[in-house]
Image (tube, rainbow over all chains, first blue to last red; front, side, top):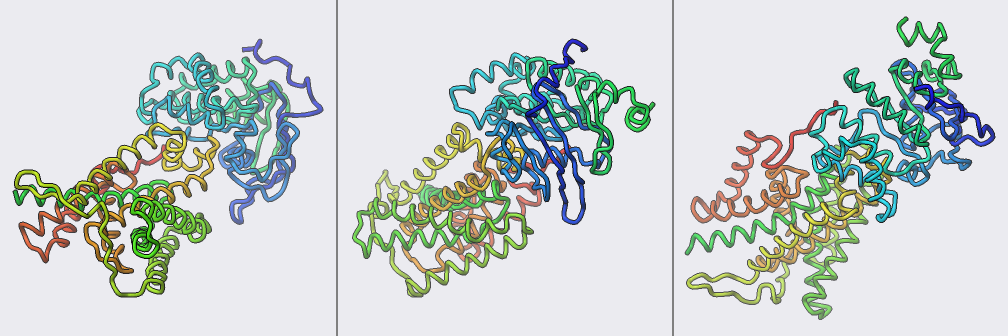
Length: 249
Length: 292
C-alpha cells in the first residue's frame, strides 16, 4: 500500500488539475455547499470525507456539471468549466462515477462500457475495452450479461470501468463502497489503488473514512457544507478529532 | 375464407395502430411524457400527402416523402417550443400542454383545409388487390403490413446497433447517467420526436389509403387507440407497442365481425382493462424497479 502512496503529489503546485474556489450550491432555498475550495493535482488521490448531508456528493455533482453553482469557480486543467453542461464535461476530460452506480441495467456489460466511451472516436474504443478488461477480468467473463443481473460488487466495478472508458484526466468516484460487503469494499479500494498506480488522478468521496484516508494522498473533511479540516491523509488518519467523528474511535 | 379476410384486415389495421403506438411509446420511454398531440401529427401528415397528390401534382412517392419531412420538422418544432421549456415542470403541466397542442393542430387544420372531409386520392398503395384463390387481398393491406415489419426491424436495428440508438436507450433508462457519458439529452429527445413524427406521417398515409376520408379529427381516434395499444403492450417498450398494436387491430376487427359491429371499440377497451388488471405494466412492460 505504502509504495503506491508516493509523494508525486506536489510536483506541480503551480497548476492544479482541478481547482474549485469558493463554491456555493443551493437546492432551492437550502444552502447545501457553502464556499468550498479545493485542489486536485495530477497523479493524486484526494478524498472528501464527512457525514451524510455534509455536501460531498453535491460538490462532485456540481463539478461534473449536473448542478449549477450559484457562486464560485471551477477550473479544470487551467480552463474555467463552471456552467458547462454535464454532457460536455466528459469531453473536457472529467468523468464521474456516480453515487448508487447508475449503470444501464438493461444493457449488456459491453454496451455499458461502450457508452462510457461515447465521447471518444470509434476506432479507439476497442483498445480501451482491452485495457479495462485487463483491469477487471470479472467483467470480461460477464461481457454479454445484462447489467442488471450483476451482483452489487460487479455493478460497482462496471460503473468504475465505464467511467474509465472515457480516458479521463480526472476520475471522480462518489461512494464506491456504498452498500457493499466488507470483503468487496477491500476489493474496490484495491482497484482504486491500482488505478492510481497506473496514473489516474482521482477525486474520491467516501463515508468510509478509514478506507478513504488509507488510500488517499490528501483529504478534505466536510461538515454541513463547508470544509472543516484538510491536509495529508496520513495526518488526518492520526488526528484525534477526525478519529472521534469519523473513525469511531 | 371470411376468417382469413378478417385476419388480414385486422393485421392491417393493427399495423397502423402499431406504427402510431411506436411514436407514443418511444417518446414516453425517452421524455417520460404522453404526447397526446401525436395523433394529430398523423392527420397533418395525411393532409400534406393529400396536398402533394391533389394540388401540387407530385408523384406519390415524392408526396409521401414531403409529408414525412414536414412531420419530422413539425415534431421537432412542437418539442422545442412546447415541451422543452417544461422539462422541469410537473408531468401534469406537460400533459395539459400536449392536449392543448392537439387542439391547436386540429384547429389550424380546420382553418387551412376546412371542415369538409376530403377524399384521399388513389395511389399505388390502394389502387388494386391481389387474388389468392378465393381470397381477395387489397394491396393497401399488404403494403401496410410490410411497412410495419420494415419499420419494426429498422427500429430494432437502430436501437441495438447504432451509437445514436444506444444513446436513446441510455436516456430512456437514466437521463443523468446518460449525460455523464456525454450524451446530449435534449438532442436525443428531439431525435425521438423526429422519428416518431416521421412514423406518424407514414401511419397517416397508410390509414387514409385504407380509409380514405380525411378531416381535421382524422387522427384523434386512431391516436387514442394507438395510445391504448402502447399501454396494452407495455408503454416504453418498442416490441410492446408492436404487439399491442397488432393485437388491438385484430381484436377490433374480430369483435366487429363476430360479436357486434357497434360494440367493436367497447370490446377493445374491455380487453385492455382485463389485461391491465392482470399485468399492470402491460404485456411486455417491465414493472418499475426501485433503485437501491
